[in-house]
Length: 323
Image (cartoon, rainbow, N blue to C red; front, side, top):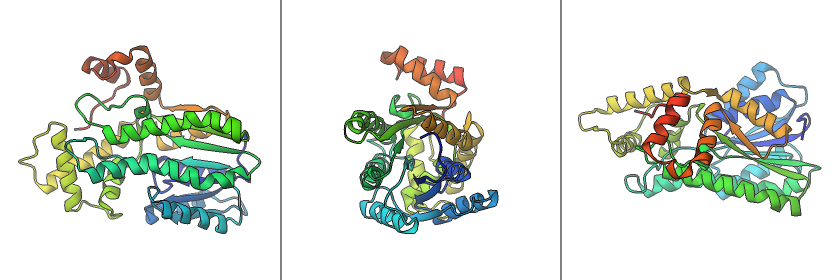
């Protein structure tokens, strides 16, 4: 699919980050877009930015509140998109929605672990199931699944547990690669790409806390503060003398650094992804850190989870662990 004008795209997680930038760039290229997110205000801002940049005449952009880990929500999203875009077919499916959390099988609650896994993996599976019949009716299609460097390296460093997100992203990668043969045999007009970003400057740390707590409000409630305390303890940090205000300040500073320290912006990431789709690449690495860690893991997989391995990689690309 070399061009997007006149096509119809589905984008999950379009209320912020890479999802927002995918929506903006697709719309700018004349692609109709239906996007979902749990944050209605996030999607409203995405639409505002699209309109501010100027919408091509006749182009449709619709927003739908949906939790991608819920099959009833996903099916409602599909039906609303079909009705509001007056179509029974789509051409592009960007399974982009994701959150962090549930780093430890020991420290963190099962509900947090499964919430992360069910969004990051279940959202990909459920949306592919839901929208595949509409894609089968199109003349051509492309499924774009967002995994991560954590889909081939289950770590953000040897001192930070990272199990739920990494397990989900490995599942996304394996599913996407398995689809290559499945689609080639049974739906050759549909292609698939797996996207593996490194550190991208998005609001995922703060957004993940809100989603885990089931809130779209700014600030941190008691549940979020407790989750953050547990996460800091699991990273070896003494929080016994820290007030709730101290905890909130740590979160705010980490969120700011997450954006400022990123080697790749959300807009740059979206451009890399869309260029990869146009080039029909099934494997899309996003960011110089993704390129570097991919090469290192392939070269020395036995050492990939040792301190020396991480230290050497972090020095090469300027990575710093969250504090």
